[in-house]
Image 1 (tube, rainbow, N blue to C red):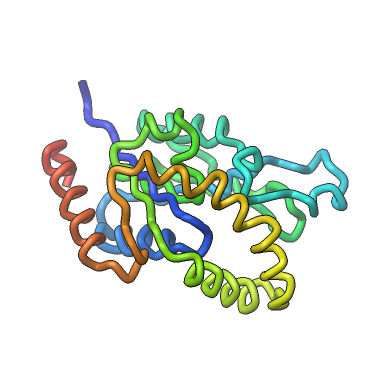
Image 2 (tube, helix red, strand yellow):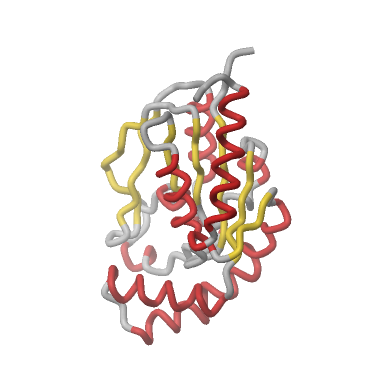
Length: 211
């Protein structure tokens, strides 16, 4: 049996710091064979819907994701075959016509709020992480991001958080914590947990004679 890539799933609520954890791990292996696959690039294509209907999309619900497509791409990468990664256009609320060519690597980091929700995805992972951060920190981080990067008002961010993000987190995201091999409190600020993860990945790579 030949070598196969290692898949690390990193989940957690919006604003939990999972992207910081992903980047911190990625930076440790920069120069080696590693790639990131973001679940939120795999939102369903909505080009067949009128724009007004697309505005109602609940991006925090499992049904918003095209996991079949994501799994198909992950399996291709596991066979060391390249993929054409989709791009999602948040202004048009549908999949862009542009794609990104991605060459297979030895380490694949799969990151997203609901990557642990689908059993089929979990079965493809070697390590499952959940970044666990208090709700007050998550809403503050989301607020700062949405106001700064997306031009949103404080009122609209809070309204969306109360009506959509919080109930979806409680119903779908938080329960996936039970599937994690490791729970990382406080996200990217937790250097000890990140260093332990890096050491674990290095060990697996050495066992596979990859690094």
